Image (cartoon, rainbow over all chains, first blue to last red; front, top):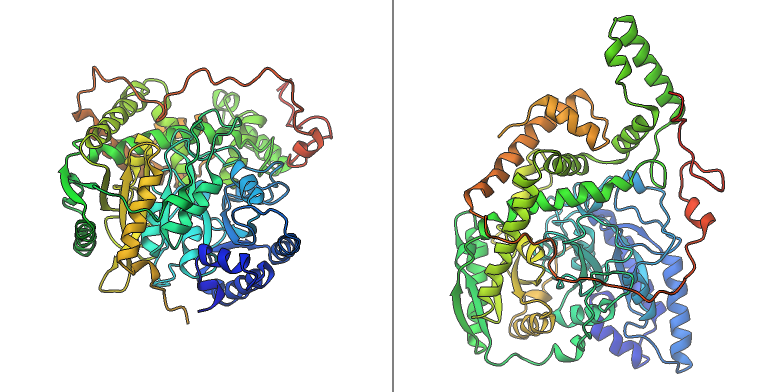
Length: 513
Length: 96
């Protein structure tokens, strides 16, 4: 087995035993990336020299017997949405094409403190808005299992790089399913932790009450290790929870006794692909064979999740993205052209006798904002800004935003009631396996409905994990989603590991000749 | 419910986006479809439901009242598209 095929847990064992150096490992990944990434397109940038330098430093420290962090020498890929000081952080947007973060996000700082090797930055839907990574302004990422299909999104690069053995650990972010859905479609393990478990400081904001960073890996063991490193209270994020971080990586191997798994009746309704349904039902049988009880529960508000999400997320996005004004940072339109354009418009209106229209033309500053944003944002980002601005505009606030916040409470109550009866909820992560590139780009609503099973966890703030549980006849991975009560990451990871000790779906690899 | 093109145009000003006529047309159709979908929430009675703004209820998160250095001005301004070393520069807004 090649080095790049091993799990992070295995690699740490080899590194600590002196059987491999971080430099060798980093080279192995660099070669693998050079070999397969021209096909997959998972990375936006790979910093081979920087990574090798970090690796050599860690190797030297290890040789000297210095105390090392929990990921010492293991390469990690980071979604291009988390700030890393002095480095480009583009969010796959023209708006931030040349933006260099002036500080480290807490997640990146924690990776550095754990002595991880930062290998490169992964592709994503622009500003994390999308479910196929097709909204990247820079490149397409292809699903390693079928290069004609999308890897899902928005953390599509983060998922594809793990699936294609271009990294064993990667950081994604999840606002409505952006870790779990691409993990499912690429056949890897991906977890969205409870809101507040991981600091959002330095994570470029999309929808602040929903955003959460989390681990993506091949196994629950590796996800536990990475989550342990990035979790914890952070004074820089007032919403981060001040609760100790359990030893996820130690506990993950302990099976759960007396587990009751809940199946949500509404998850198995019209719209669910038959192959996904049978793979999920088989996975539930695996839990039964491991001693778990299965109980049906009801989420009466499950069907409203997508509607609530597509009010709240765009509303928050329209506010958060107001910061891109062409003044403070990010793209700015050509000012001379803009002034000339406004003058020409004014003259034309006056010549036509339209004095009132000429007077109500944009001021040059307003036009600077509008043009800079029009040039910097892609169509999906514009659509969400428009949707959010509309929903928050005068006269609509109660009908949309306030209504959505109320239904959000009802969705949370569905979870609370379910968790009185069951420990975890198991179900499909996506309605179908990976879809074709281009298949849904012209129909935003169809793309939004892809998020059916994942948005509720963000709205309720609970944790969720997707693990591989089978393949379609066409050879596409299928994901099982487990969801738990707030701060039950430990349970989710242990349940996922139990499943992975009984099955081998997570060990399958795409044939990327 | 469908949005009118004029409404979409007004929202594009509020959202500080300059949209082309073709974008306005497409946005009118697409936003109407999404808003139509969202309208299903009206089926639910929510009169007695407390709105939920955040998943984790927290209040009064304070830090110690200690002065810490702010970010370095030169570093922050290095990302500005147009600055003079001290200020951000914008087109003249007075006297228009």
